[in-house]
Image (cartoon, rainbow, N blue to C red; front, side):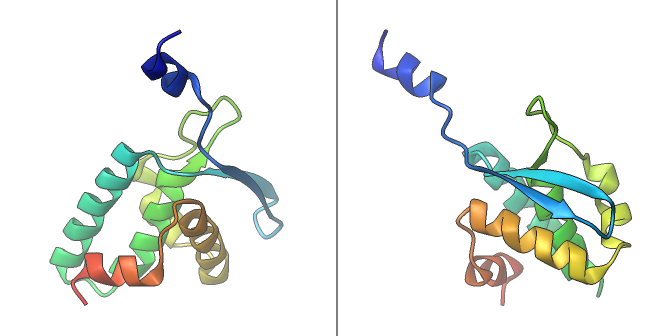
Length: 117
């Protein structure tokens, strides 16, 4: 097996199952791939360009959307779910987004930089 095949087959994305008793569910969060991180950064740029005061909450929901996976590894949410998640308990989406950011090795400074602060 070639080196690139070995790399391709490696299961290198960290996962964490998070209990969300407020919603009565467990959500599996997975580290973002390089492509997912790039897509996330593009979406954050679009959000911050809009000037809407709800952008920070939408950004937290976006982190969840980009990180949550189903049992089979497919995305658990779509971008259409961002406003639904953003409309839920701030403490829950904050906790979930912080866990997702840890998995993605993303810091608050990274987010501020993306927002242009």
